[in-house]
Image 1 (cartoon, one colour):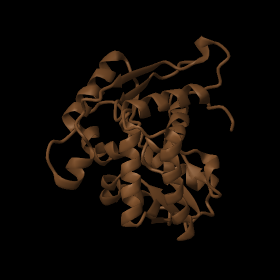
Image 2: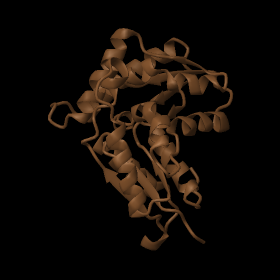
Image 3: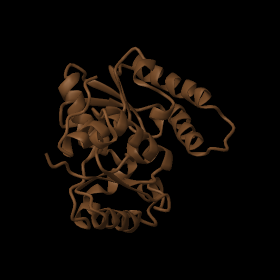
Image 4: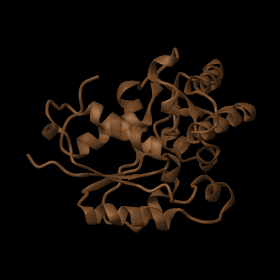
Length: 239
């Protein structure tokens, strides 16, 4: 059976890309090397910051993203995934400059919630300020009739600091310390009515997991990995 080649437009940031690939491998039902899917990764951390142009305007990341997409196409990828939530603000523009299909991580998140937790009506959202201000995640979940609860300003700053600390491998904080802060913010979202939490920044699964809260926690990288496996023509492992 012909399997499609997965292209990963990565580097936003590098560790999120690594985490995605790790989860892709973990979700693939393989007994030998040859059972795994072919993956082409362009980890390009030189892509300009995604948050700044969303909030303030300025240098767009799209030209560099499009160059990476072209590199993946030339290397033989059949479709593309982007393990970065904020990059999806530019998805439609990127699609006009890319010949390959690009899977939307926002659709993947929304479809998983609908498929497995359709009774959940209020979603707590942990994301960058840019992603929250852009409103795309809220709009996509809203299409299925779900409301979103975002952190209060002080808690949002904690999330921003946590994301920065995860990216900064010289910050001096352990992942456990960062995770404690993220869980505290999540708990306050639950106290305000959140019935589930979406880690809508691909760095956050590095410090918090699905079992860390008393409500369902959605890891976008794990969901994207499983969607990529299906798009490649296989079925992810059960569980």
